[in-house]
Structure formats: C-alpha cells, structure tokens
Image 1 (cartoon, protein in one colour):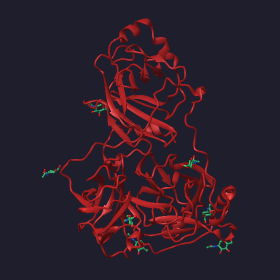
Image 2 (cartoon, helix red, strand yellow):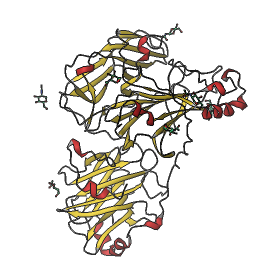
Image 3 (spheres, helix red, strand yellow):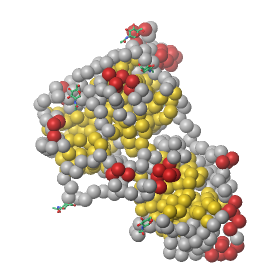
Image 4 (cartoon, protein in one colour):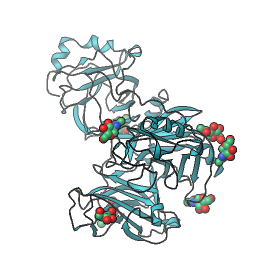
Length: 560
Ligand SMILES: *[C@@H]1O[C@H](CO)[C@@H](O)[C@H](O)[C@H]1NC(C)=O
Ligand SMILES: *[C@@H]1O[C@H](CO)[C@@H](O)[C@H](O)[C@H]1NC(C)=O
Ligand SMILES: *[C@@H]1O[C@H](CO)[C@@H](O)[C@H](O)[C@H]1NC(C)=O
Ligand SMILES: *[C@@H]1O[C@H](CO)[C@@H](O)[C@H](O)[C@H]1NC(C)=O
Ligand SMILES: *[C@@H]1O[C@H](CO)[C@@H](O)[C@H](O)[C@H]1NC(C)=O
Ligand SMILES: *[C@@H]1O[C@H](CO)[C@@H](O)[C@H](O)[C@H]1NC(C)=O
Ligand SMILES: *[C@@H]1O[C@H](CO)[C@@H](O)[C@H](O)[C@H]1NC(C)=O
C-alpha cells in the first residue's frame, strides 16, 4: 500500500477540501503561522508505524523533530531533501543546539522525497514505539514538534527558518468550531443525583425537530459537576420506543433497548470532532426518533442533594458533507442470552464474530465500509478488548485494541488511518474479564453488575445495518458456569470459544434477524511493545555524514 502512497499524496498536499481525505494520513497541521510548513500524518493503532509527510516551501533541506521541551537538545530529528546528487535522508538526534548527530539505529524509513513547484515533500515512517533510547517515544500526549529548513541543500544553520508546535499525534482533535454554530442539546434538567456511589440516569427524549436532513459534525460535553459525571452516552432508539421518560437506567424499561450509539463522552475526554468529509445524519425522515441519554454519576463521597444539568451538545450543519456516518455494533449479543462468566476467574475471555458475507442478504452490492473510529464497551469486570479484522480466513489487522480497559474512560478513539471493511470480511471481538472478587456468576446483560462485550465501529458510508453480533451455541458445552471449579475455568472458556456462533444482524428497524453458524477464528498476539526496524533497508544515510564537517557543526551552534 505504501508504494502507491507518495504519488497519490502529492496531489493532496494540505488541501482542506472535504474530498481530500487521505486514508493513510488523515491528520494535518501547519507547523508555522505563514503556512509554509505542513505536516500530514497517520498511524496504525496501537502498535504499528506512524507515517509523516512534511511539505515545506523550499528547495533546500528540510528537518523535522520530536522534542522533549520544544528545544533542539534531546530531540529526535530527521533531515532530508533533494540535492544535486540525489535525495538524502537521515535519522538524527540532538545533544544540544548544535549540528545533530546521526543515530546509530535508523528508526525512520524514507518513503519518498521530491521537489515540485518550489516545495519539498518528504514522506517517511517509523514504528510508533521503537526500542532505541535515542528516539523520542510517541505516546497519546501532546508532543512538541520542531521543524527547520534551509534555502539550499547545504545543511547549515537555519536562522529564523524554524519553529515549534505542540500536537497530540496519536489522539488528534482538530481546532474547535466557531462558537456561534447551531447545536441540539441532549441534557438532563436539574435531576437530583442520589447519594449512591454509582448511579446511572437515563433520559429518553425527542431532540428538537429538524425538517430536513442535517449533519452532526461535533460533539461537545457540557459538564455541570466535573467531580460526579463519569461518562455520557447518547443512543438512538428503535421505533418501538415512543414515550419519553427520565429515570434510573436498566430497570427493565423499554428504553433499555436503545442501543445505537450516536455520541459518547468519558472522563478525561473533550470535544469530539468528526472527520471533515462525514457527518452523523439527523433530522429529515427520521426526525421522530427518540434518543436515550445515559449519564453515569460516580459519587464515592455519597454527597446528597446535588442537582445536575449535564449533557451533550450536538453541533450540526445544513451544509451536508460527502458521507453519512454509520455506527455499527459488533460483539456479544447484549441481553437475553446465557453466556455466563464464572466467579473467581483471574481472567476469562469471551468471543463474538460478525461475518459480513451475510450483509448481501439485505442489499447488494455492499459498499466498502471505511472505519475511522471505534468505541469499546464492557462493564465493571472488563479488563481488555481486542477487535480483529479478517479477510480470506486470515487476520489482516486489529480495528481496536485496549489492553488496559478502564470502564471510566470510555471514549470514541479515532483510528490513525481509515480501515476498510470489505464485503465478506469477518470481525472478531474478544473481551477479557476479571471476576476474582465476585462470589457468583456474572451474566451478559444490561445492568452495570452484568457484563457486555461490544465494539461500536464508526464508519462511512452508512448502510442500513445497526448491529452484527453473535453468541456461542452453548448447548453442546457440558459445564455450567455456576458450578465450575476454578481450575476448569479455562477449559470452559475454550469450549465456548469453539462452539458454533449464532449471528444476528439487525437493521435500523431492529426487526430483521439472521441466524447462521460459524466459529470464531483465533486472534493473533498483540504486537510487541516496541519494534526494531530491520536495518538492511537503510536508505542512503552516508550523504549527510559526509557533509557533517566541523564547519557545519559550528554554523549550527545557535539556538534552534
Ligand atoms: C507553498 O507552495 C505551494 C506549492 O507550490 C503553493 O501552492 C503555496 O501557495 C505556497 N504557500 C505559500 C504560503 O507561499
Ligand atoms: C455566525 O457565523 C456565520 C458564519 O460563520 C455568520 O454568517 C453569522 O453572521 C454568525 N452569526 C452570529 C450571530 O454571530
Ligand atoms: C441507591 O441505594 C439505595 C440503598 O442502597 C437503593 O435502595 C437504591 O435502589 C439505589 N438507587 C439506585 C438508583 O441505584
Ligand atoms: C484480577 O484481579 C485481582 C484482584 O484485583 C488481581 O489480584 C489479579 O492480578 C487480577 N488478574 C489479572 C490477570 O490481572
Ligand atoms: C432499513 O431497512 C428496513 C427493512 O428493509 C426498512 O424498513 C427501513 O426503512 C430501512 N431504514 C432506513 C433508515 O433505510
Ligand atoms: C448449524 O449447523 C448445524 C449443522 O451443520 C445445523 O444442523 C443447524 O441447523 C445450523 N443452525 C443454524 C441456526 O443455521
Ligand atoms: C462467513 O460466511 C461465508 C459465506 O457464507 C463462509 O464461507 C465463511 O466460512 C464464513 N466464515 C466463518 C468464520 O464462518
């Protein structure tokens, strides 16, 4: 895929039109005020490569780095360009405000570098986590990016052609919207938060009517009590839910069946902005639908009598974007089923699958689904969630991995690159639970003390399928979770994994089911925490070493 990328991307340098979405590098920032230095990037979650494309309006050398504090000292730098004797590129590190040194371990790979109309465009990649202590370790935190460039290919002091910008590469959110944009509010109104340590409030409501179709492009949390509100989810309800209400969740009300996630927020999260070419459709034909807002209040101090009016603002526009967003639920069919997790299990894994071959029974042809974000969901016993992507019987990718699942930090996570689900692909959702501190079995169900195992896939273009979930047919499993001795738990887990799966595919009316056989395929191990790049494919690094004479070192010695 990468071999096609340089040429393709060249046409799209920092274009901002909605059509210009680059699937391998969906993120873009100018690093300077004058907009002469543009960085695009994309990555493979969670432990893969990150690809950068630096475009600078110069025909000289270009440099880019990741810096601990915004200065050169201690930063991880690449320098490259197109010179009279060809292209050059090197992974370097800076020990001070002087000419950087070549890194013994070249973690960066040049994919292409070219000059076009006075602009140098350099595309390169590295593993997100390298095993080299000279490299800056990229995490999902804001990182100070530095850049510099020259007017010629002689690498020397950059004078004022330098700068710094802080960007969260792995958890990027574009700048916020104009403050006067229109929004719909999905809020609770002065509800009294009970003094229980954990409380779920549900409000089933109509949103203000929009007569024509609009697109939601941004979701903004409004938090009345930051110390209490732990997460909020807004779900779309099926047509059978017709009456609004405002009361505790999961008490057996009809609104418990509203399960199409529209928006989510979790502690630590902020405004979520959708990619520029897509929007969540709202209004028009489906404007009679009800929505369920679920707010989880965490009140460990058991404060009494607190009134809360928190919720979500859905910013919308009448200027429709290219694609409607669809949100598809995958994982273990929620409710109704017997797929019990034994008590006292140090770890217990559940599995579910979605075979997209069956989508063609609903409509044909089925478009490629472009997945751009994922929200993983279990309840309190969940410790890990992994979502595998299979094509032609082989796992080709993960659509999501959270090895440190935290119930209180449920957030829609943008993928570092758009991942394509083709008709016939299979999705496997694996959840790991820990029930060591539980005395009895945990059911798959809706209550917080029950468990769920779901992955909500945010994709475009939307198709009329809201869920593709499964459960194992446990009839052939000669064990009962309630009576299982601790040393047989793994055996029981394996029997359920090997059992045939009943698969259910639901459309937006929640009323079309299709059950079929199939068994879950094995997921590959999560890739290692850091990756050593094979040095045999080192790109020409000698050029820069030859140039790095004493004089150049001296020229560099001025603050970056
Ligand atoms: C930078 O170069 C590109 C390509 O030649 C050009 O389109 C753009 O206008 C230039 N930007 C500035 C700020 O000069
Ligand atoms: C809101 O923004 C739009 C376009 O950005 C502008 O035309 C309009 O006048 C603004 N409205 C207010 C009340 O500021
Ligand atoms: C709050 O706690 C009380 C006492 O334990 C319990 O009776 C009540 O059902 C709880 N309320 C909710 C909404 O969970
Ligand atoms: C499960 O939870 C218990 C109690 O919190 C903990 O001691 C144990 O290490 C956990 N097991 C795993 C596999 O993490
Ligand atoms: C989805 O498909 C069902 C059954 O074919 C149909 O009744 C329903 O109107 C469709 N919904 C949308 C939003 O297209
Ligand atoms: C699953 O397969 C078995 C045997 O191949 C068959 O008897 C059964 O009817 C199938 N079940 C469903 C729901 O398709
Ligand atoms: C998915 O469905 C296709 C078509 O029915 C079938 O060939 C394939 O084996 C199924 N995959 C699994 C894992 O059951």
